[in-house]
Amino acid sequence: MTILVIGATGRVGRHVVEQLVTRDAHVRVLTRDAAKASFPEGVEVVQGELLDIDALRRAFDGISTLFLLNAVTGDEFTQAIITLNIAREAGVERVVYLSVFGADTAVNVPHFAVKSGAERMLEAMGFGATILRPTYFIDNEVMVKDVIKEHGVYPMPIGRKGVAMVDARDIGEVAALELLRRERSPSKLPLETINLVGPDTLTGDDIAAIWSHVLERPIAYGGDDPSGFEQSMAAFMPAWMAYEMRLMAERYVSDGMIPEKGDVERLTMLLGRPLHRYHDAARALMAS
Image (tube, rainbow, N blue to C red):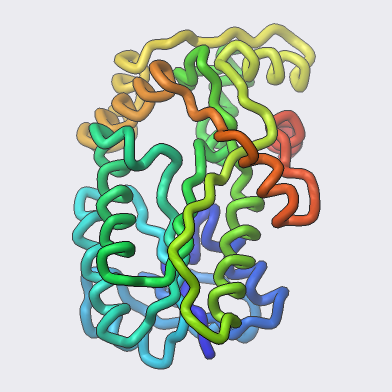
């Protein structure tokens, strides 16, 4: 049977596809522009988007298992609702859904609330699903590496509670393993939630210290200022999205993203290797 990957071209999705192909899975992807997309040999490509019902139905034809990753957009919840309804219509019961750490508590943050709603939908509609809840992506640091290098400041308002940032490679591999576990099971498996975290819970000051070590010069933490962060983000993204980033940063400052007991050990056992560390990713980012 075939696994459909939605969200296959982003930082996480491409790792999901690669990990599935490496494990000899039959993979289909849905992408907006097939001419611009590049996938491993053997991956089946359907062109379309999540609000294109005809394209969705084509993508789901003959599918047994779904990986769903919704981008943060103004109509994200509509996309999730429609996709899960079309999945049900196509007879798909096995799903791995990429949610977010703390989705059920940080409901004032729009894309957290969306993902919490999708989680409830998966449960209420009786899907056999793995809900993956990643923390902040280490890979997001590509957006701020020039600021760090040129201005000597780590600008993300991470706060002083701590965030266990996770590497997209770890997310992608866990997702692939869960997709294959559900795909290959003789019967539908029960719903399960997995927190995806990094091995180190780091504060803003901790991260600045790592960058100081990597660059061999002092790097300062920019401080706990979600309002200033919003103003910076508004320079290159829509105002509604910059405001959402502010709300998310306020959660970092007030609550952090701290693993639950056993999260790191569970992921290490599942992957059969150590989790990727922030320090190593920072070093690789500056070498790229």
